[in-house]
Length: 165
Image 1 (tube, rainbow, N blue to C red):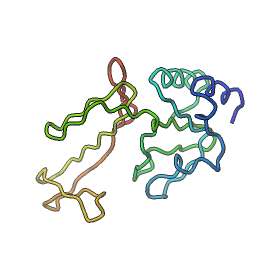
Image 2: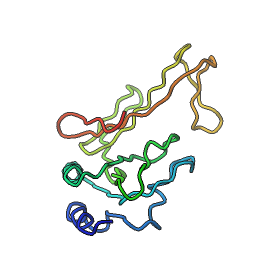
Image 3: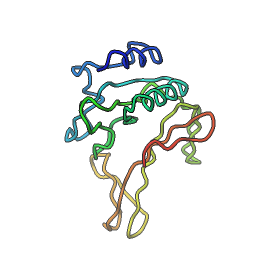
Image 4: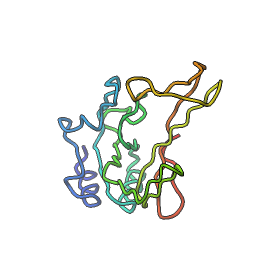
């Protein structure tokens, strides 16, 4: 990794939150299926929205692509880098600020800095769904075809920012 860039990231998030040792990449570079393994320039772990903003500006200045990562449980490789040693993983794992969760009203109140994964499922048939025995896979109750994808959204002090569609 370019030492200058590593130093600038470290000024923003602290040296312990800039990972550039491939031996430590595992949790950030291998998706849930282990089909997608990437080799980023670095993994940068901010803990505030201000840090995220500074990292995004720095990457824009140096023309370094960003792959934003929430939990890296993707089954499609969408949270892994594509070009070796050219992109950073912006890990949001340190930004977990849930204020209130109300399952009765299906509502969640979070602080700025929280990253949410919204996973719509569009069904050809009825909207009813069920989980399979693995407690992970969601299928339609009537066996009809469906499409399931993930959007990643960063909650900010102002308007939410869409990080991936």
